[in-house]
Image (cartoon, rainbow, N blue to C red):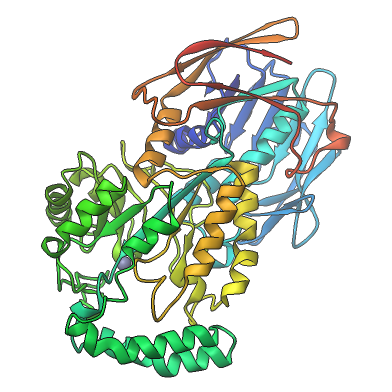
Length: 554
Ligand SMILES: [Zn+2]
């Protein structure tokens, strides 16, 4: 059991941190015996724990007692652990003293974490505040330049590694569903149902330009094949026939998605109101943000999607900034889909620090807006569904990969054959850390003039090959809700067998995959032979679905 000592103000962060790193812990209670004492931003206390982890970016009394000198560093740097670099967003210090260096400051190569071992106790001094780092990731989020780094998962991996190195075992419920390697959540923001809806507006002229001249430029740059160039010119020429209803609307790609995703499921986020651009953070309306379809016009489409086991969520316009508007938008989706719970992703990813509170008050089940418009990766530093710090129940399903970020010339501007390499590291992180990879491919992106279908098909193939579970957004959130309701109540060691009592709270949902209990075992590593974070240290998984007593042989 880990005992935590921290400032009162960090308590909501601590609670959420240990939902992401689901291992037994409690706030330190005087008189209780613990294996590990984790102090963060506070003085340590005299403890019988075999391992004391002292995270702080300030000088503490224990520094003096352990002969450690500290030196403040310029904010905005990285610390390195073997081949990994972890960005530190809050204050950080470097350390000098007698001990073994386990983290280094990337800029100065000075020690950022120091292990001082004695017979009685191992003391690890780490020069930043773990919970402050967690708070920054889950609120402000990471700047786009660090988007590739799953920062919170690395903090968890480093902490886990220390605990396993200096103890005999560690038990956790990892963010990995039973019988699968990780989750991939396929979503589609529905911005343009049909080109026919647009008459002669900026969208149509934009399409005509991109399909003709734009495609020619793309073909010259190797971004489009001559086959796609030809198909785009044909599409542009056929536009009058589409308007006359003589040719199928080439932006209507819903059946094609169902075919590509055969045997899987996905979530479609639809806009509640036609012609409403909403407002941005400065109160301005940008006419281009309005969509040209109305829920009443796509009733048949919505019922077809639901029949095909697709989830329908809200693609919000003003729900992010106003609770009345959020309620009205939610009601429209409820009426159109008769779904009991509704999730949301904002159109153009509009968002501010009030949004999660507003969405919770309006009655949404989850949000999936926290991501980047301009790049792919981990805005909140995590592969996991999390609860924003200022709400009670609403969960956030962070967005990791969006087609427009990959292909738009102003963003990553990748050629289709470059996409596999670009998203490779995200798949590697899924295999390492578990969690859910959330993908947004816009409704019309697989048709003219984009033809971004091959990259999507390849992504699905890779996810299938690597053993992913494909939940809808609501199912992914439910699975994490179930994991959050789980506690490891008791661990008893009997020889080389651990008897572990787990209890699963609300929502006994047998339609979802079960949970895993993972026991990490020290396989001989010491402070002189620390393992890289990438190594799969010896761990034993058991699966469970209900409250029960599990036995694990070490
Ligand atoms: Zn949108």
